[in-house]
Image 1 (tube, helix red, strand yellow):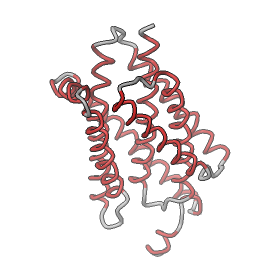
Image 2 (cartoon, helix red, strand yellow):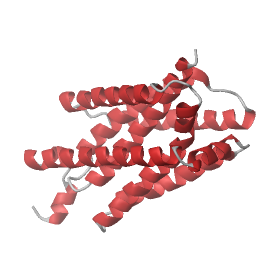
Image 3 (cartoon, helix red, strand yellow):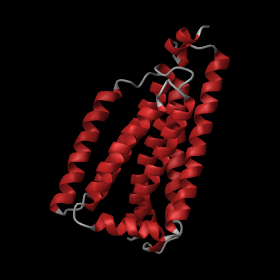
Image 4 (cartoon, helix red, strand yellow):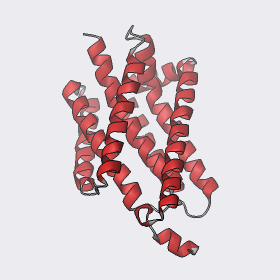
Length: 235
C-alpha cells in the first residue's frame, strides 16, 4: 500500500496486524503520557511550584487565566500531535500537552495531598478513573459501535460546563457535587466518543494524536473523580 492510500485508510479498514499495531502503540503512548504526568506531578507537589500555582488560582480571575492558557496550549499541542510533517513534531505536541495538564492539575493535587488529611484520596481517584476508563474502552472494543453521534452532545455539554465554570469564578459560587457527577458522565461520553473515533476515523500512523486525545479524556475524568472523592472524604 502506498503512503497516500495508507493515509486515507482508517484503522478499522486496515489489515488486522496493522490495526493491532496501532492499538498497541496508542495505548503504550497513553501509558507513557500518564507515567510522565505522574512524575511531573510528584516533582511539582514536592516543590514550591504547586503551591505557587494554587495561590495564583485563588486570586481573582487567576483560575480563568490558567484555564484560558490551558485551552490555548491544548489546541496548539493537539495540532502539533496531528501533524503529518514529522513524527518528532507529533511528540512535541504530546509532551507539551502532558506538561500543560501537569500545570493545571498541580494545585488540586497539592490540596488533595496536604489539605484533606486522607492519604487514600489520590489513589482512590486514580483507581476509580482507571476502572471507568477500562470499562468504557471495553464497551467500544467489544461492541465495535461507532459513538461519533455523541460529538454534538459533547460539544454542547462542554460549552455549558465552561459557561458555568466562568460564572462560578465571576460570581463566586460553588458548583458542587452535582456538577462534578455531571462532568464525570460527560468525560465518560468523551472516552466513548474518542475511543470510537480513533478506531473509525484515524489513520494507522496517527497513534501519537490518538494517545493525546485519550489522555485528554482520561485527565478530564480524573479531575472530576478526584473532586468527588475529596468532597466525600471531608464528610
